[in-house]
Image 1 (cartoon, rainbow, N blue to C red):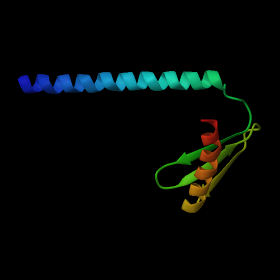
Image 2 (image 1 turned 180 degrees about the vertical axis):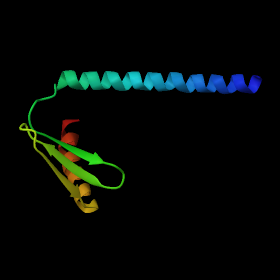
Image 3 (image 1 turned 180 degrees about the horizontal axis):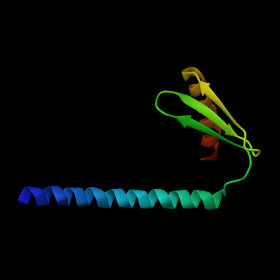
Length: 89
């Protein structure tokens, strides 16, 4: 009986931690949306499924284009995206 209670206490602690992390992430997302509300129109996403990296482009007229990047191109793109971000820090 004590073993079951100990596991339940640990699970409850992990559940509380998960809930607080989810709350923090939701607050960060809400702050980001306030700082820069989502714009309608054209968008581009970088999608990574741990096997391939793709750029998915959605246009305002609901057309979509997808490009799969080679590992070298993905690294170059990451460098190009990080460089302007670092100058804003």
